[in-house]
Amino acid sequence: MTGVSSLTGRLLVATPALADANFARAVVLVLDHDAEGTLGVVLNRPTPVGVDDILEGWGPLAGAPGVVFQGGPVSLDSALGVAVVPGEPGARTSPLGWRRVYGAIGLVDLETPPELLAAALGALRIFAGYAGWGPGQLEDELEAGAWYVVDAEPGDISAEHPEALWREVLRRQRGTLAMMATYPEDASLN
Image (cartoon, rainbow, N blue to C red; front, side):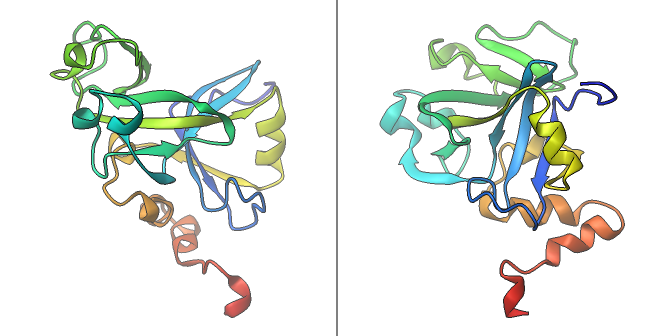
């Protein structure tokens, strides 16, 4: 990762030029980025599957729309929980079953009984699968212009209308990047 700082806790927003169907207009929250590679989850790919349909007891803790999200094309048969625990990082002990990733955002151990975390969680999303890049792979994609890197906000995890997240994240940026939010889905129709 020579010359590249950690992207953990930041968002990767797919540029219109990104041709991979798995990531077209994707907003990826980076959960881990180091010399061994990158792991993240796509925040704007809800599925029709309810959380309680696959993880009993977690449904009431999941924010609207209360469904499982496709976190990426890797390990679709595994589940990852990402949650926000309100409050200042370091102000108190992290709740049992939650590991801080960045700021108020962390990973939930889905083996933990949900009732132990219920009072502590401010927002929770369950993801089937994840997005992963090997060493240097994401850096190559960044250099090729496939992704915009922007700051995440805790509310991004629990966006009530996740299908609009790509435009919303771009719209809140400054300068020309904000104008990309108006880019048509099919530029050939312009």
